[in-house]
Amino acid sequence: MLLYVKPGIKAIIKINGTSGSTFGGTIYAPDSLITINGNAGADSPSEFYTSIIGYDVNLTGASNINFIYDATRDYGFPAKLQVQK
Image (cartoon, rainbow, N blue to C red; front, side):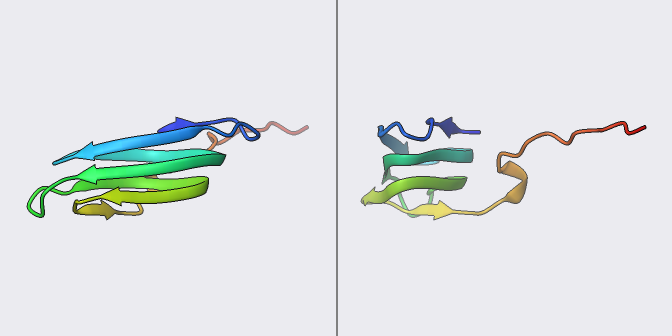
């Protein structure tokens, strides 16, 4: 989990990436405004290995941003073992 905001909270979230920035994990803020601002060159992009869940998601900046979905970086509940009689 990269960032978690409880449902019902209307947060304003701003993530600023620069050349070579790398982020991974789930951004979960279902009632929030999320702004991702990048300022990276073409030879060294900002990379987001994320799932973004927000009410409003905006991308801004003069940059090269790569969004790469990687299921292994998604948040998930740990497996549970149940014993049954």
